[in-house]
Length: 493
Image (tube, rainbow, N blue to C red):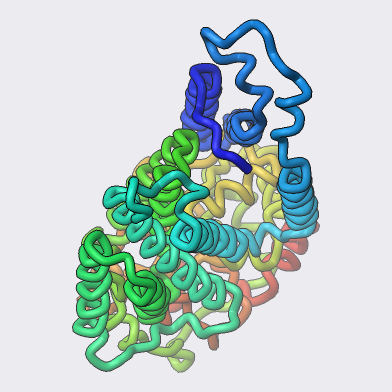
């Protein structure tokens, strides 16, 4: 289709879409307003997509201030490329159907994998747009009078394809690790830091050279190296650091979209990409602080990798106490306050609804019930908050680590369900531990710790044992999390 310059009305529509996206991010910052935030995001995206389509239909010229009042409608209609428009609408419809079916069928436990997959698609889209612009720059209006790609467009194109390719390949590895197709332990390549720096330097150098020489070999070499470094950056990262990886890739996908927005002369893409990129970067920084990681080392990749290798196995030979659902129900009925600590094990067992029912039963007995959420509990930021919200757990009962950690010493029972690394006191005492320095929930300070775990043979995602299992005030409840909670509920009745 012929490219039509964006008119003032289209710019206004893009501005409104951008405001909707900002409101969406604000709404998504809290479970209480997340639905409203999603609605704003959907409205903004609809406005942006419709405006983009209309700016490529000559009828939009009618809205341009100062246009001639007389129009040749037959000439205007003749200029519309109906075949291309039909292809675009068919692609939108197909993508919408796939998205709708995926959203309906996806389990909450698989949300981290889904997010990683979405990031990979954003990265791949950026790569394809950059490739299309390189192969047919005239269609994008990025050539000079000599038929050469504009220098600024080469920079945008080089950055877009580099960031997009890194996002795609890195997200594929993250998906495979989260989905269990690859092991959670880091894959250590010899001399990986030198290799990563060499590849990164090569990409930066070639992007600079691309501004002087638009030969195909330069463009495709940038593409190949960018795909490669995406794999190299994420492969050495262990499972315990995966929440940070997800937020980091989220940021990368945003910057890739923003870069392609410049190539497409689309202000909505620039605004949206910048919002996603900056918010993802801020989230990555917050996650790094929550895990005591260096933000720079996250960007470089392979953070926490050496330590993860030293993770030990579970120490079954140490003495521990086993309890039953009856024991747990009795102890909790006698308590004044209980703090529930959910983790990925709760997500896998889909125990959030049974957990909420247990909390309601305890409240009926006059027990104060609170939920403690670690920033990296689960496999992505906010994973536990979403699961608890799905089960209609009151937002006022859910507290972040810094708001509730001081209450464990005055709590009768800490009820840990499927959370391992985020409750491990080794993070505070063992300098050889891969999670050393990471802020953890002080569950061991409670009078009694009830710890639900499938068996004593497993270890957390970081691959280290948890000393809480063997403490005198801990009672291990070995069973499937959902079944154990349901048994506790029966005994509470």
